[in-house]
Amino acid sequence: MYAIVRCGGRQEKVALDEVVIVDRLPGEVGSSVTLPALLVVDGDRVISDPAEVGRYQVTADIVGDAAGPKINMIHYRNKTGYRRRLGHRQRHTQLRITGIGTETKPEAKPEAKAEAKAEAKPEAKAQATSRAKAEED
Image 1: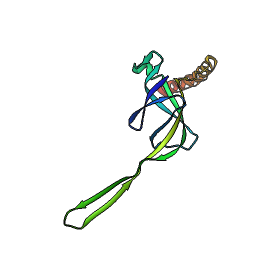
Image 2: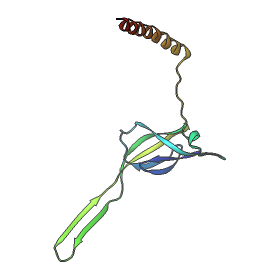
Image 3: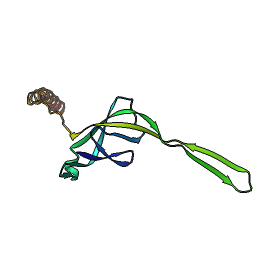
């Protein structure tokens, strides 16, 4: 099973227990991040429908930070003595993919929903009676 995820403005192909290098992400080593899946391939089954893929999520742990290769730039203008030397190293984050699966949202228990409705009704009645009294005056 593998998935295509969006991270850092690019798309990455990820599989379970794979280490992927992406653009710098906020977070500390050991913390968990969730990436949105764009495509999921599970054996012969390819899931690309946006409504169905929206239920899938890819979870990953931050393994560490890394830096890309050094890029040197030299600016030079002829006959003026103008020379500038610049350098840049892109910062990256290493992610270990820990799970590819459907998003599980814990649903509230039916008893808790009934209790919430019961608590809301007396307050609504009190507000309605106070409005009615205010209109009569």
